[in-house]
Image (tube, rainbow, N blue to C red; front, side, top):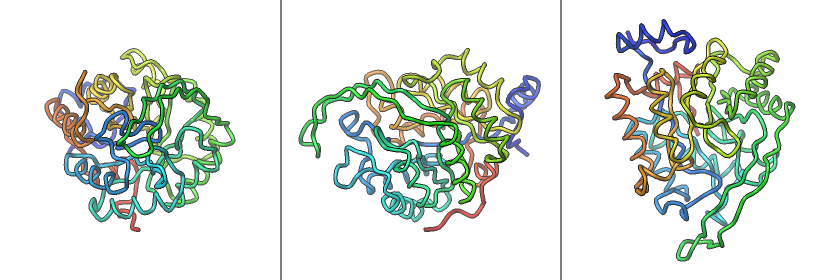
Length: 320
């Protein structure tokens, strides 16, 4: 029987599982759209609910067991929204097409959103949700959004900081626990392990801890093999890790995660290219590539049921 979890810090256990082709099945999460760039970055990026549902279904069929969602403002598809009704409608439509996919919503929100706006999505009953472990500075150049795209705008520079404190992180973790939502803890650099241990000490997160290493964004750890190896050594016991790497670093870092027995996040929120000079035709194309790569490296692809078992989620999918 294939192992579902193991101690990622133990080289002997990794060696045994690799030698017997028994590493845990790979959980593929797809982040289909973000709260910052839109179709100006890639015309195939989904913005409307209909586009998000269509691409999620294709990703589900390609092997994604989890989808990470942002809702966009129906009055301006170029912007994100924290409106729980918008999230709820997307969740309900996705559940119709993907009966058991894990629904993961953002509490990182969109550029410029307040803490109060970012936490509203929890009312949309996600099964898991992102939990940023600290503030992040932004210095991102946005391309011009040209007509005939709706809501055109000039190119702009986003230069700001998302404000997050220990108390805000704890408040959000407490809200998730009260609602039965599993937090996906977003770790941008090694200092965030202080925050994880603070949450553990307060009893606000439960085993298995779901930790995502976010690499290569503007104030995250550099997306290098050396940083990945160092970050894994600091994982608390009974943790599962995945890697979300930005732009050109997505492919090499997700390859590392496959090799090390971790899990992956792909999709157009983080990277709009399949390879240098070639835009993704869809999010499913990114899922298909990583699934094919994993199979070639003796990693099975986790079904939604297996992913739920590994993450400590209910085997009964949420209903809307």
